[in-house]
Image (cartoon, rainbow, N blue to C red):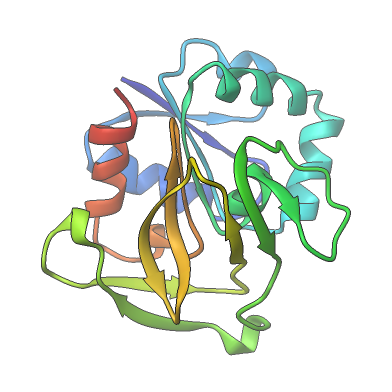
Length: 189
């Protein structure tokens, strides 16, 4: 199953390695042509403004939106949450607008405020998941079609809407492959 990792900026290498450890055939995506034949895509964390700008400069923005809207299984982490959300509060960032979410950038603090926390994610089993938050966005509102899969501090941090899964944290920065496996086994169908 060919899985792409958007490789414009951010933690794409770490996602590629995690997906490969799960047995996926992974391709880095930098051009429209790289989207051809993919069964799934990961949009990594990084700087959402930079990624959005690079997508538009590389004429990948519209092609990416069309593929995801047509059912391409997609997992976005951190900046990926922002890029997939319909609304970014307090910011005019152009997003793909494919998930019924309102998010706030860097809402958990600046780089120096980064932290790790053990999350309860029922769909992954009883063992807590170590979540790494780095300049993480906060999901402020979810639409009626969005399923909340995990919460932290009273807010959703892992949600799914149809073929899209997003997390405000970075699972690729841990050795725990359960979330990547969930994406490959349950979102990619």
